[in-house]
Length: 488
Image (tube, rainbow, N blue to C red; front, side, top):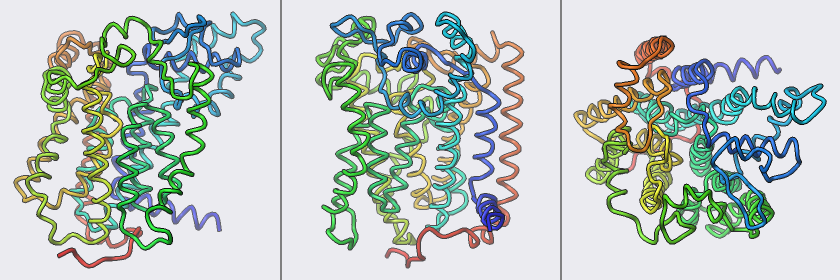
């Protein structure tokens, strides 16, 4: 029986329209590790060390390993990051840590071994907690699109957008926490489409626990829950109750952590931030968030030369504009596809707008050492799913334009992953990438570049050959929804 089930699952994976790209993503993430493990992931690692060694949430003994800390009035140091990634990593980290420090007789030796294994452990956490689940969610996304009659080119482009064409994908094998937030956001949207409301609440709660900015998604989700069409017993209030029940456990973890560390259930570490970062903010809330968004920062995030959406992933802005122009074109859509779009589009673009306003109100809007607008990254894979749902609305010349607009994002992915590019806030991203490749690139950069290009060529070849038999493959797809008549 188990062999038959395994064969069935393998057949579903083989027929999944995104399988070739997901395999490439996993292979690249496993074979090209450690792009930019810096003060950000090291802050989370310091908390993991403190829990393992001191059974404490304070990182006093490891504070010198990172500048990302918060100092409370009692003189204790804590990580200034949202605790979700650490809490989710503990079940995996603790046995790995035990193996690393095995037979060490004193703390000095144990900490020396941890420091030596730090980057390897962070890579492992990124692969297990981010890369593999994210690839699985993209597979589910492709199946959902196929079951709703989405064309093969739309699924291919959406898959490229989710896996390679956004800032979250650049950070997916670094333990920054943005990768976890992005996959949780994508997961809650898929759960929403399937009307699994308890799971929506759980994933939304974990999302906020991993990235404070994801709290901006809460009102959007609640409004969608109440507005969702359906005949469930109890209607919108019953759905809302299930969402709230799902969010209970993450909420309790949020309250307990912040009360223990910072003196209040909703007191964030930003209140006691390292003064270096507070000074960079100069705003009203904790010296970081201003009362109103700054127009210059908003422009830089959208169209600036340093790390805006326009220079890193122009397809996002193009899609937003096209949806405004072609919103009326829905003829031929099934009810199932229209129902998914009514969930995905408001969440994707409402969430993007909310994060943009928040980010433009933040003195460190640029994200520090970052290859893109990383404070927007939690929503970007979901915008890729919105691309897949809406692609068939557009006329052929527009669809070609969407493919062309994806090329800069793919090129940036290849260069960043090949060159381990460290882009500082005052640097323009493309001149910096050019310098990395043609002025200061070591041999390993060119070897990685060739490996990445070979992988994309092979995956694109597979996509081409599979597309020749796409009508037959699509008919064989396991359906996630009953066939529906087209929307008039």
